[in-house]
Length: 108
Image (tube, rainbow, N blue to C red):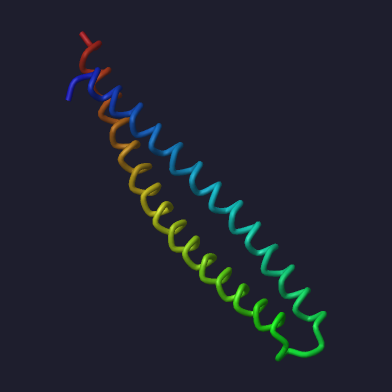
């Protein structure tokens, strides 16, 4: 692989890495917001004295839906973290190849 190709590859992988890190950050923020929503629902749910009331049942259903969303977010974050590890390793490899190409090209 030539020096130009290696440099382009490093740039592309660095871009992918930053994109994955940003997605993980967004998911983390969404999880925090979701956790706050679940806590708010639980607080409102405890204010009702009758757990069999329609409002309390509706709150339980919403809480269950929010927990399902949270599970999906965790799965998605795990996928992104796995991809981030792979991209990071590939980036290190590409950087070594680029450095080796620089040494080979400019050594006399």
